[in-house]
Image 1: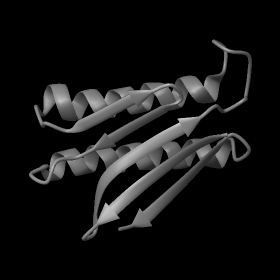
Image 2 (image 1 turned 60 degrees about the horizontal axis):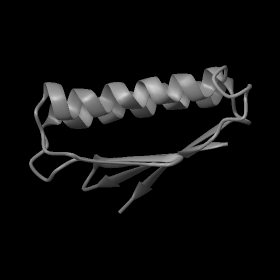
Image 3 (image 1 turned 135 degrees about the vertical axis):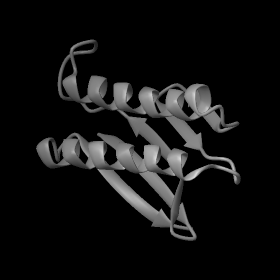
Length: 105
């Protein structure tokens, strides 16, 4: 199962960590994994390359974490909100394969 954990501080989304495997198909053919990976890469690139924010992006085997800097704009936070919306829509369609959580820190 893919687990996506979003962290909110002072009412704003500050980070997201995604880990696991969907197990919805063979490696390279898993539509849920591909959808999550694509959405996450889009948001990471939007924040770091398009918006030019010094966000922390940690990529490890089976885990990716994006942490917005303190000076992050509303645009960056809206990008993470859009990711949360996308992953929740996937969760509705594939509840056995993806779980989203939002924590207040």
